[in-house]
Image 1 (spheres, helix red, strand yellow):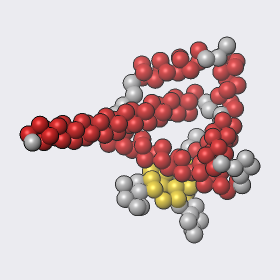
Image 2 (cartoon, one colour):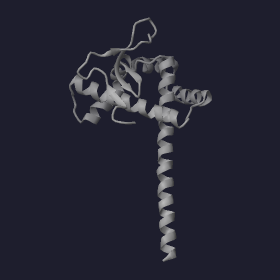
Image 3 (cartoon, helix red, strand yellow):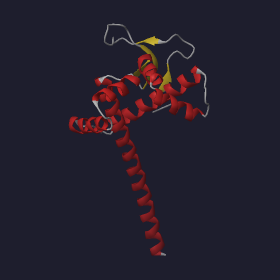
Image 4 (cartoon, rainbow, N blue to C red):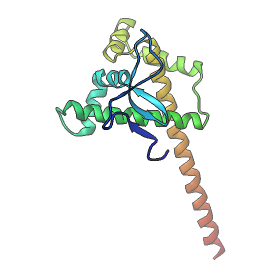
Length: 171
């Protein structure tokens, strides 16, 4: 990804609108493009509405009561990074099966005493069934990209170590 890989739209311009309409028929406002893929205002607002995510953003900023603009900027950067990671997952042909996703959702639901508590938790985060499945899929793909990157680094380190060992033995 080059320097233009992720650029917030509207840097000096009016925000663009997406040609595709979400449910309800209204056009989605694009707040950033990541290698041509839009990040929408709705995604940004959903992240900012999640109280847990908001606390994590505040901790990352190191400010107890940050300005809304600071939170929004960091949240947008998080969404851009997530989109880049998901694009890397696609490039590497990494996938999550429906069975794996169902298992992860089942595991998540088991953390709650009952479905009402689970429903409240989802509502607090602005999630519905569809967005929960997509968030879980994205999280699982993110984990797989991280694992693939670590494996690649370990292979490089091991290769370098092996080459160094061979040189040391030859001397």
